[in-house]
Image (cartoon, rainbow, N blue to C red; front, side):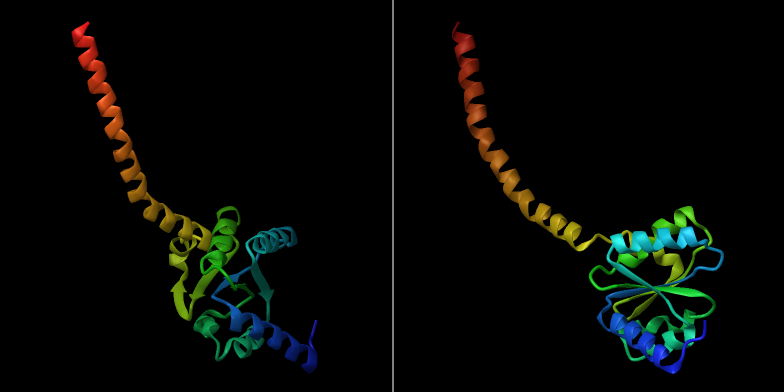
Length: 173
């Protein structure tokens, strides 16, 4: 269905606002996917707070220009779907990576993370990045480890004294 000029302006404005606030963007070719597979992809993207848009390449190039997402412009060719993440840099990569495991028809062309282009062969590396909550828990565990070790060490002193007293008692009996 052909879009009139006003509809094209609205699409460009929507994609531009997504790109302005996005931390990461992913580009994948969806040729050969069924409607059911696309629905599953959109569902998993919504669960991960990723916005997916199918946009004509010329409109996408206009919308992504002068944003941090313009690093993906060279890979915009063919029928592509754009994924935008506003919160987590690895969210788009995780959604695409998980989907590709079951559906080889989705071909990831590249990712843009904080204005830097990442080749498609690095998808798994980006997908394995921890989420914000996971990173915070890792840091907290590292901060808590010395305190736990100190507590165990201090707890060991009375235990050893008790063992020594018990050994002396057993010797005298």
